[in-house]
Length: 309
Image (cartoon, rainbow, N blue to C red):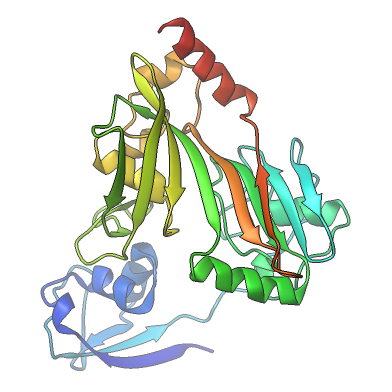
């Protein structure tokens, strides 16, 4: 059944395109918002509005949302290279390889952490959306490293709250182009969807607060290896923040990395690795921490840089 909603245009969206405004108001992607408008399912003060029309503060939007898609099926498929770092009755910690998504989603037909756990006979929490049960945080498909999944319902509730309250310690290592100045610092810049490219995110005024702390571990001739601690957990946060500093992650062509350097280092993805993850265990509150070594492609890139030092 379709979902119809009527809501006023707030002052902050005055002058914004209809598709961009719907994206912000209802949490839709720009593509879905544009499709709804093109179908004639967006009315402004009772009149149809196209996707590129401009919103006017104080007017009323009537939006008819399409019937939700059926939940994406979880396919139990073994994930080559995915290691179980630790597990008990409440949590399972994995070392996620490159090319694997955290959970199924529309448009993704590859392997997933959830599918890999199912193939290994590991049952996870049934909390959360059907396609992402047990998932309390995610890593990008092109990002490797340590990740925790809840097995019990209690663990899911506790860990979701911990991520929301920022009591989880997430540390990444990132190889970025050039040499950030200062070598130790904090990036405090709001992030939201890119105004023109739906698949990207960007530093945008009025976006969600996003804070990244970093420290240079080692500086090479062409790049710097950074220790990164996230205070918030926005989509693509590290990639977006370092790109905004004009020091994108090496190999991250989506956010402005030099393809020549990536090729020289043998990289086919961004050099970004979830190095460690620490949290209070849901069962007894004991602090636990897990780490992940660099996979071969990332270690190989560092070896080339070290030889060129």
